Structures are given as structure tokens and as C-alpha cells.
Image (tube, rainbow, N blue to C red; front, side, top):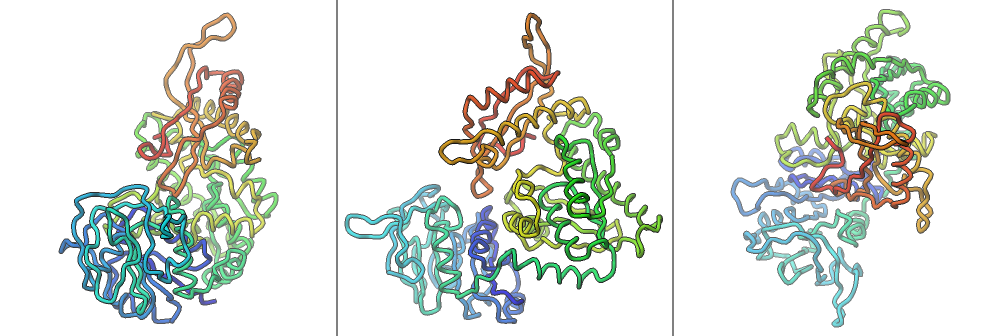
Length: 539
């Protein structure tokens, strides 16, 4: 099936991914590509007739500088609608004959934008009206430069007191541009604006639906793999789990999953993974107990990035060993020819940005990794076109349990990056227990206004091991034991996370249980740092 598609050209904004997410939420397929693709590439991308519109993202750059990236000219020659956002508006103005100047006053944060000109993009979209009857939008601004002169053929579409040209439109050519960011949730009508552009102005078909995608994905996997066999690194996380379920749906016993227990999993997580994939899906899973190997290589290492690299390297070694066993034992008819990974679209965008040398900002806290080519296997990535929320939808559609698919993300290195400093088995065992108590209480505590559990109301929650000892009191005696910190966050737009304002009663209950039930911990703290400036991780 050929889907309608939207092309998003990335000029380097840390929120470019959000544009794609909003378009996908409208069930329209889109792709993000670097802004410096060639005119020939653009024409080729549009040659099959499926391209319905182009969106130009924001950027840290200045449009008036000679060295700055421009949109390929072909974008304006295709005859499809174009939407410029922030820097995208500025480069559109500059390239089409307008003027951009360095701003004397930067504008970051909340702004009230007046819609003007009754354009197709903003018609009847407003958050409130002034006493004079002007439609107003509650928007999020992030810019220094601004358009000071409209290009020929454009009219004013929006304004603020400090930014007189905050939006512009050429309705003959269907070119629109806004200085604010409709992709972020802080712009209240942002979703409506992007849906108006994609569905109404571009007339893209809303046919990107996960339950329908299963058949497409299964057919693609079968065509790609044929009768060859596949080995999948099953981490137990959402992405690899959904990838395993999808590939198993497509090729059954041609898939062998290798589940590496590195000794840094959450409590009982290994058993849960085996129960699901062997017990319920009837997939072939090899469980490798590699805890001693991983912990041995981590001995004496306290720097977070070194820990990540060691854990990633050991995964590679385990896979190489298991792939060799599959071939030599005769258990694999043809030998594994494919390595499957649960790579998702944000990983692809980030790694693409790194290759193009344009990734000067961190687009998410996800650490992109991949097994090297030295494994000698072809790569199968059935989820590489999907965002996390789409992966979850797909998982439920494949029959995976809702609680499994919608659980909090947990990093590949697991407890290895939840233990500050050197990783020791003693620390991991203590942390596993404390972490399980915290998650248990979050799941069982209902917030009365929403009727949801605090686990569902938070996007991430975990315990962190602090390798320091504190004095405590147990009965008549003093103890000298370790400290754990609790972390629970609520995220928006993947770039912002606020610490969750958990009820004191809940925190008290968690603290009491950990101290009473986990011998070796006598103090519990709660992390009240937001991102930014903190990260979601603790490393």
C-alpha cells in the first residue's frame, strides 16, 4: 500500500522529532531528513506522487548569515504546500525575497499570538478572543531573529507586540509559515494547526494506522528474510519485545531470540520475559546467564559512559558466541543470516544526524547503539519507521499484554546506570529489591481525581543506589547502611520532565517498606530535580 507522505526537513532543532510525532498522530506517514539533501534527492522523493507537503523545521542558526543552511530550491518547485516553523519560516522568507534580521529582543516561552488575515491555516482556530473580537493563540516561542519584511505574494498571518510578523501566508502557492512552535504541547492549538495543514491543505490520507500496519510489516519481513533464519537480541524492553512478537508472527520458528540476563535486570524480569515469549507466544528463546561476565568486566569502573560501553560490548560478545553455537550445533538449518533489532525511528533520526555532522544538540535522552557489522549478519529492523507510541499501539494489536507494552522504559544497561559509581552484585541485589517495592506501591496507589495509579501517571520511576552509608536506628541499635534515592517523573515533549509530586503518604509507605524489608538500606531520599536542567537518568 502506498501511503500519502509528508517530508520534514530538519535544520537542527531539538524538537524536530515532535513535528513528526504530531503528523503521525494525525495518522499520516512522514519522514524526517537532513535539510541539506540535494534538489535531485527532493525531486526523486516526490517522483511517485505520494508526497503531499513539506515542513521546514526550526534551528539554532541565523537565516541572514551566508553560511547558514537553506531549504533545497526544489522544495519550492514541487507544487506542494510548504509549512515553515520558526527558522523554517525565516529561511522561507529569505529564500523567497523577504528579509530576516537579527533580533534585538529574544523571545523564549509563552506568547499570545494574534491571528490575522483569515488564512486557511488558522481560520476558526483560537484559544480566546479579545474584546475587539481578535482571535488569539496561546503559543510557545523560541527565537532570536525575526522576519522583518514579507516576501512578494505573502500576507501577514499572525503577530505579537514584539514580533510584528509572527506568521505569513501565500495562499496561491499554499506556502505558510509561523514563528512559534505548533509541535510542542505548550502551543495549545498546535495539534489543530498541524492537522489543518496536513489533512486539509495538503489533503494527505490518514491511512497510517498500526492495526493495519501489521499485515504490511509481516509481508515485508517475509519478503526480506525468505527462508533464512533470524537471531534477535531480546532485552525485555518494549521495542525488542514488540519486534520479537512481530517477527514471530511473520516467520515463526525461523526466529531465535537470545535473551541476555546481564545480572542488572529488575526483580523477576528475566522470568517474566521467558513466561511471555516461551509460555504464551511459543517463540524459541535462549536465555543466557551472563551476570558473572558482565559484572566481572564492570569491576572497578565508575564512569557512566564507560559502563554503558562495557555493557554494550559484552552484548556483542554474547551474541557472537550464541550465533556461532546456533550454526555449529545444527540447531539452525541454514545458520542465522539475519540480526534483528528493535531500532525505532528516533534512533534512526539521531544516528542520521550524527552521520551528517548536524547533530549539535541532544534530541532525546536515548542512547543510540547498534551491534557492529563484525557479526557478519544482515540487519532486520522491522520497527525502524515507528515512534515509541506507535510501537506500543502495534504491540497491543499483536496481542501483547497492555501492562507489558505500556510499562515505563528502562535503559539497556539496566541497573548498571542506576547504581552510581562502581557496579557490584551486592549493590544490584539491594537496588533490585528497593526498586521493586517502589514500583509495587506506585501500581497499587490510586490518585483519586483521575482514578489512575501513580505508576500510570508517571512516565518513568525507579530507585537509584547511592554508594554511601548513613547512620540509622533499628530498635535499640544503630545501623550503618546504604542510601537509595527514588526518582519519578512526568514528561512532556520528551525534552521536558518534571518530578512527580507524589503524595507524602505514598513516599512514607515506600520508605518504610524499603528500610524494613531490605537489609542493608536504612535511608531513602526523593529526587525533586526537573529536566532541564537535570536529566531523567541519574548518571
